[in-house]
Structures are given as C-alpha cells and as structure tokens.
Length: 252
Image 1 (cartoon, rainbow, N blue to C red):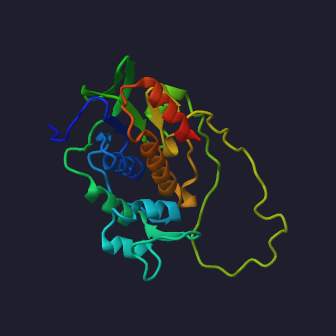
Image 2 (cartoon, rainbow, N blue to C red):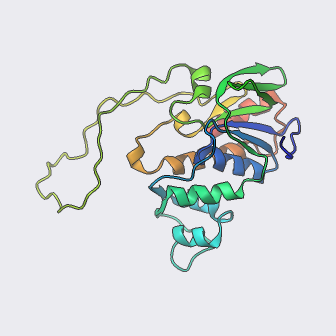
Image 3 (cartoon, helix red, strand yellow):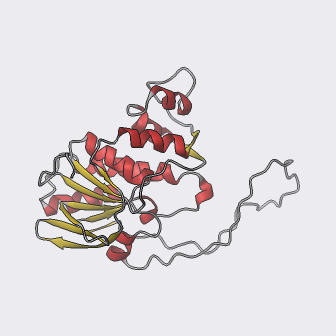
C-alpha cells in the first residue's frame, strides 16, 4: 500500500519503468502532482551503456542529481549552471540509478504488466494482468517502442526491422568514402500525428522510437516528460477541456 497522496485532480498514472517514465514521474512530482509508476519487470534495473545528454536535459536534471553525477555530466568547473551548445556522454546505468534514488517510496510499483485502460467521465482506469487496477486523472504511456498503452490508443505502430547492425571498434579514418556518404534515406517510419487521445498521452519511444545506437533515447524521453509536466502544471486534471488543450501544447 502506497503512503503517497492520491488526490483527485492531481493523479498521474505512468506505465513503464525506464528512464523516460521515471524522469517524467520526477517532473510531475516536482510540480505537486501525485504519481504512480507501474513497471512490468520485478525491478527497475539501472543498466545500459553510454548515452548522450543535451543541454536541455542536463539543465532539467542538474538540480536533482547528486554532486558526483552532476560532475560526470557537467562542464569542468561548472556544477550549478549549464549554458548551451554541447552534449555530454554518461553511462545510462549511472544516470538512471540517480533518478531511481530520487523517487519517493511508494511511487514505483513493479510486477505490473499493463493490460488495458478505460476512460471515464472524470478520469481513467488502468488495469493490469495481475488483476489489479487503479483510477487516475491521466494515463501516461512511457512503456517503450512496443507500448501497450500506445497500441490501444493509436493502433498497431507497424514497427519494422531496419537491418542495421552496429559494431564498435577503433579504425583509421576512411579517406575514400563516397561524396554522398550519409545522405541515403530509406524506409522512414511515418511519424505519428498525435501523441494523445482523450486522457491518454504518450512519450519517448512509445510515440517516436529511434534506433538504439543513436544514444539519445533517454534524452528525448526526458525532454518529453519535462515538457508534458510543464504543460499540465497548475491544471486541475479533472477538467477534461483543459487537459486536452495542454496535451496539444505538449505535442507542439
């Protein structure tokens, strides 16, 4: 049983337990919302290799991170401010571990596989395969590129394998690369026109998946969560017209 508050008009249900879900949860908590995060795995594991964090992402997380992690991702001799124009590389495991340590007890609920949702006049109910359910004001799908929330809201995402393989190794510079190297585009996935439907909204790979080797999935999802929470800041989530209006602002 969670000891966290669950007040009508402030209730945010988040499905997913990765960095996107957790960073979104932290963004909502910092704005006074009540948050429940539901992850299908037995635990949220802080694993993963190197990722890139852009200036907006670092600025958003700087005030939350401990000095050790802040030192790892910030510019030399600059732990409290971030200017612009650069990226920093950090291990996904390190960044995610710090996020998890900031989440209050009772917010994350593991072992909950999302089954379906039902919208009601004054909220939304999320159901899980273990028979449990919860009612809230909005439901955030942050459950990855195979998002069950996104699939129910928007249908089959029509994912396909690109055939790309990535091998990491040192090599000499390729001096005879063709002039048009890197300009070939093929089989672009059609972009989703909407990221929200009613009281349902998605972020990160659930609506705009990217190839994992880009090393920026965590950054994009973190930015999504920040802008979503900022859009809904101060809104009574029971007021459906206000919610949908702010969802549209978030999508812009």
